[in-house]
Amino acid sequence: MEVAKILHMNGGIGDSSYAKNSLLQQKVILMTKSITDEAISALYNNIFPREIIRIADLGCSSGPNTFLTITELIKTIDKERKKKGHKSLEFLIFLNDLPSNDFNRIFRSLSTFYEEDLRKYNMGRDELFVAGVAGSFYTRLFPSNSLHFIHSSYSLHWLSQVPDGIENNKGNIYLTSTSPPNVVKGYYEQYERDFVTFLTYRSKELVKNGRMVLTMLGRKNKDRYSKGCSYEWELLAMTLNFFIAQGSIDEKKVNSFNIPLYNPSPKEVMYIVEKEGSFTIDILKTSKIHRNSCDDEKYNMILMTMYSLRPKKIYLDSKYEDQTNITKNE
Ligand SMILES: C[S@@+](CC[C@H](N)C(=O)[O-])C[C@H]1O[C@@H](n2cnc3c(N)ncnc32)[C@H](O)[C@@H]1O
Image (cartoon, rainbow, N blue to C red):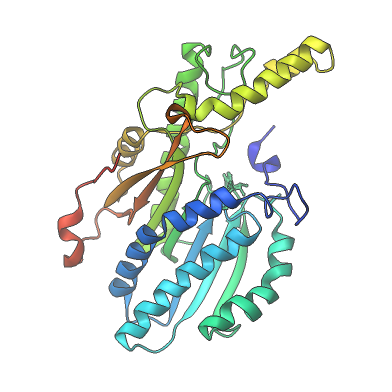
C-alpha cells in the first residue's frame, strides 16, 4: 500500500485526535524557535524590498501546531519589518501535507485564527493568505523559484514507503537489535533516496537567497539500532506478538508489517546533503528530547534542526559568511 495514500494523523478535535495529542511536537516548535527566527530574519534582510513573502510548511498536519507555526513565522518577520521601519507585507502561506490529512479542520479553524491570533498583530485577511497543498513532499509541490522560506517540523523522518526486501524482519515492526543486517541497510537506503529526492525538489522551488529550516527526529549516535528510536515500536511489536500468541491476530499480517520511518544521525544527514549537492547547511543543531514515559538516558532521542539550508551557488550575505561551518551541539 502506498504510504502517501493512507498516512495521516488522527483528524478532528476528539480525544484521540492529533490536535489534542501533539504537545510534544508543540514543544519542539517552540524549542527550535530561536533557530527558525534567526533564519527568517536573515531571509527578510536578504530579500527586502519585497511586497509578498511566500512560505511553505511541509507536513503541517491539523490542529493548534499548524497555526502556531504560521504565527511564529509571521511574528518574526513583522518584528524585523518594524525594526527597519518598512511598510507592511503580504504573506502567502502554503500548508502542505498528504491528501488524507484533515485539511477541512484547518480551513474550518481559519476564521478563529484570523479573529483571535492574527488580530493581536494587527493583521487580517487582506494581508495573510492561506492555501492548502495536498501531496507528498517527496514529489514536486510548487512552481520553480516560487518559495522564499520552507519550514518542516517533526515530519521528515517519515519515509515515502516501507523499504523493499525487508520481509525477514519477523517479529519486529521497525529496526531493533534482532533485525537482520539487510533490514538495517534497507531502512537507511530508503531514507537516503527519499531525502535526496526531497532536497532536489526543494532546491528547484526555493528562490535565490531563500531559506529552509528542517527539524527532524533522529538518533544521537551511529548505532542504527538505537534504543531511543525503537522504544515505542518495540513495545507495540511486543503487544502484537502477544495477540498472535493468543490467536487473535494473523501472524503473517504482523510479519509483513513495518513502519515507514527512519531516524537518521547528524552524520548521515550531513553526508546526504553534501552528496545531493544543491544545498549547504549553515548550522545543524541537535537537542535532546525527553519523553515523559521514560527517564533513562539511552531512551532519549534527538532533534536535528538544520538552519538556513540554502542553495549552494547563491552566496553570500556578509553577516553569515563566517558561519558556513557546521556546528554540532551534541
Ligand atoms: C507528527 S506530524 C507533525 C505535524 C506538525 N508539523 C507538528 O509539528 O505538529 C507529521 C506530519 O507529516 C506528514 N507527512 C508524512 N509524510 C509526508 C509526506 N511524504 N508529505 C507530506 N507530509 C507528510 C504526516 O501526514 C503528518 O501530518
